[in-house]
Amino acid sequence: MTIKTALIDELEVLLQFPLDSTQAGIKIHHTAREGLVDAAAKLHEKGLISQQDGGYLTDLGYEAAEHLQHALRIMTS
Image 1 (cartoon, rainbow, N blue to C red):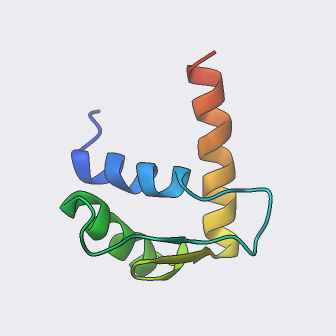
Image 2: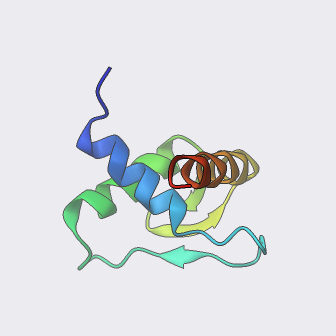
């Protein structure tokens, strides 16, 4: 199994969200790399973030970001 670039972009966007507060969001500006703009829109479609250009993590998005950060910590240790 390979990981496509679009999925890597989605993971990269999820990693930008801080997990220490549900009140902290992000904004993907229209001038950001195209892959990241598309990734944010896709994450919104999947119900992981509140806005097409970032916003806040949904409950499902928070859970996904939390698991992603744990996996990344394991893989980089």
